Image (cartoon, rainbow, N blue to C red; front, top):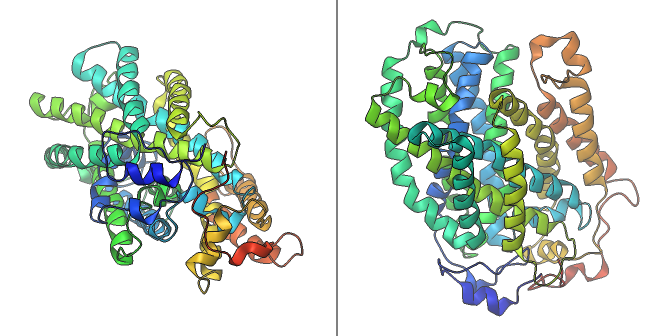
Length: 478
C-alpha cells in the first residue's frame, strides 16, 4: 500500500485531492507549508468540550479549589506541550509520521506495540470521546435525536480525514477564527458569572491535584504520538524553533484557556438534569449559548479529523501487509465505523468513562515517551541519513524498547493506578497520591530501557546496510 514518489509529488499542496501516502517518506519536491500553520492546526482541535471537561473534573469531581486546579492544569499541560513540540521536529528531518519515526527506538517490528496502541487510542478512543460531546452539543442546539446527531458528526469528520493531510490543514485553518472568537467570548461571560471563591476544596499537591495534573497531561500528551504527522510535509530547511514553538503554543494556550474556564463553570449552580454540554452553556445568553454549542460540535469534528487520520497512519505504520488497493484513506473509513460503534455505546455515563480514558492513555504514553526521549538523546550524534535508513528497514530491531515500555506500563498500573474500576497496590494504601501511574511508568521504562540496551540480543541490532541513504519509500505493503 505504498504510494510511488511521483504520486506523492503530484499530490503536493492540492487541497481537494485524496492524499495517496501511507507510511513512506515525503520527497523533498512534495514539501510545502510554513511552521506558523501549525498554530491553528493544534489550536482548533482543542477548542471543544472534551478540553473544557478536564477543568470540570478538577473542581466538580476531584474537589480541587479553583486556583489549585489552574496550577495543576498549567503544570500538566506544559509538560505535554513541551513533549509535543520536541517530537514534531522529526517531521521535517525524515518526512515520516510519528509512529514511523519511533522505529529508531523500537525497531521495525517492536514499533507495532506503540503504533497499535495509538491506532486504537486515536482512531477509536478519542474518536468516541469527541463524537459524543459534539453529538450532545448538536442535540441541545437543534433538538434532534442524539443518535442522528452522532451520525451527522461522524460523516463530517470521517470525510475530512479521508481526504487527508492538506484538506485537514485547511479545515483547521478556517475553523480557527470561528472557534477562537466564540470560545473567548463565552469564556469571558462564564468567568464573570462564576464564583471561583466558592471552589475552596482540596489544595495543591494532594491526590486531587495529581489526578488533575495527570488528566491535563494526558489530554495534551495525547497529541504527542501524532507530532510529526503534521510536520512531515514541511521543508527540511524549516527553522527548528518554529516547528517546535507553534504546535506547543497551540496546544498549551487552547488547553489552559478552556480547562480553566471549565473549572470556573463548575462553580456555577445549574439544574441537575442537564447534559454536560447544556450545563456548560446554561449561564450564557441564548444567542451565545447557541454559538457555543455550534463551536463545541465544530471543535469535536476538528479534533476527530486529526484522530482518525493519525489513527490510520499509526495502523499503517505497524508494518502489516495489506492489499495494494487498501490505502490510508480506506483504513480511515474503517476506523470511522469502529469509532462510531464505541461512541454509540458511550452516549450514557460519558463523564466517568472520559475520566478513566484520560488516565488510561497516560499509562502507555508516559513509558513510550521515556523510551523515545532516551533514544533521541543517544542518537544525537548520528546523521539524518543514518537514522532515516533504519526507519524503513524490516531487519532493524531493538527489543529492549518494547519490553521496557510494556514493563513500565504494567508495573505503573499495578502499583499506582487509581481508577474507578481498579486501584493499584500502592494507591490503595496511600490514596492521597492520586494516580501517578504515568509518572512511575515513565521512570521505570526509562531505567529499564537503559539497562536492557546493554543485554546482547535485546539492544539495537543494526543491519549491515544501516549506513545506506534513507529509502525513498518503504517496501510494498508497509
